[in-house]
Image (cartoon, rainbow, N blue to C red; front, top):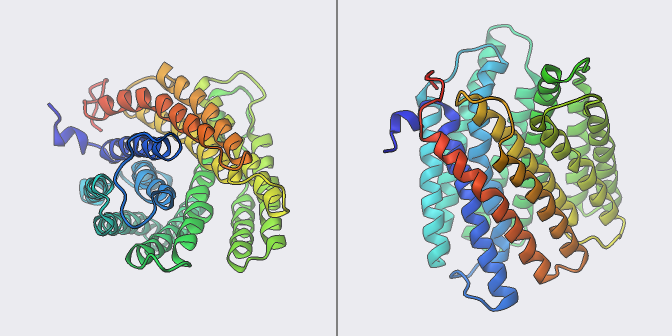
Length: 400
């Protein structure tokens, strides 16, 4: 029997459970939508808003934030030297996303656009609660006279963009004729929220992880990288919003160089465990995605390959790496990559390649379906295993 005490024993338990389950469920929905569109199979009900427009917002603002908060509400106080958060800080975030998930699925099953708007509104409230909890820790650090934890402030900057993106999304859902709000929500969600969160976490954690398991590893993570990354991101987004292709290309080229440098400097030169390799190989998708974005802005016909190299190849690979590490360590298990994690990671690489092939082939339908099917098959066993861990006490009998 599932115990609320167990599920709420640590921030990551309920939030990881919701996020991973939502990701799998949305992949099922998207696969059904694509199959119906390209092969004439039974498809989910649709409201007035085309389902193709909902795919990105559902992933960015409903599936991934619970995973983000599950990790950040655990590590933020530790980064800044404070005790772990109490349930009042993280339980409402989990409850909010659980309610948002339920409302979203009522909306997706029935094709009710108003219910979908309500789901995103609830998710926005949950995000506000979570960001407020993180901000209080950062402000306490300043009040105590400590040096600022720049990784924390970088995360908060990304979440500020994410909150703005969600507000723009709600404007679109309330007035679908608004042809400015949805592109803004998607741009902020991808380029200023999702990607900076992953890059910041990797800048903080990847050299630390590697230094613990690779002999003679040099932990390289200068702070100027974060500042340069944000500057280049601002150029890229300005180029998009102002429709100035050279500005976008410059931002994308700088981001390619920065993430390429990170990949080179962080790459293990010696023997390393699989749990580290999935992290560094996943990160290596970042310069690939940004390079494709630069090429696209210069007129090279790569379609949506840049976005999917960054979301499937980069972000999804890092989800496997980071969530697995937290799940293993915080359940009293060894820090190793289980077989379902290996299969999930391999499947994600194949799904990313298939999705890029589809993009280059002018959104070829069969390749779209193949990519979604591979992705779903790859992460489902991993999700089921993790879900069982989140609802059971720690294997070593410790609290948390």
